[in-house]
Length: 123
Image (cartoon, rainbow, N blue to C red; front, side, top):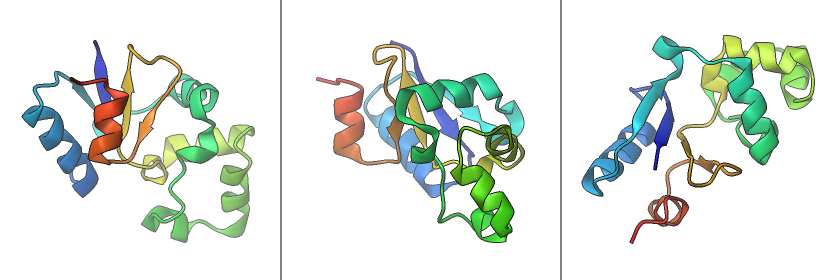
C-alpha cells in the first residue's frame, strides 16, 4: 500500500498525522506543498475524488487575505482561476490530505484518528 500525506511540515495537524502514522508502523511519503510543489493534475484528481470544494480551507489565514473576487474564483472550483489560486496559495488547501492506492477514489481530509484508521484499513 502506498500512502501519501500532503501538507506543510510546520502544521500541527501534519505533525499529529505523521506521528500517528509512525506509531502505527505505516510507511508513507510526505509531500510538502512548498518544497515539492503541487500540480493541476493532482488538484483535478482530488476534484474527481471528492470535489475540490471539500479541500478548500476557508478558515486559513490565506483565505482571509483574499479579496472578494478571488474568494468567488476559488468557490467556483470549475474555473481555471480557482486552480491557479490554489496552485499559487497551497495554504488554501486543508491539511492533511492523505491518499492511498488502496482507495483510489477517496481522500482522507484532516486528522481524526478513527477516520484515518478506517481509511487505511489498519487491523
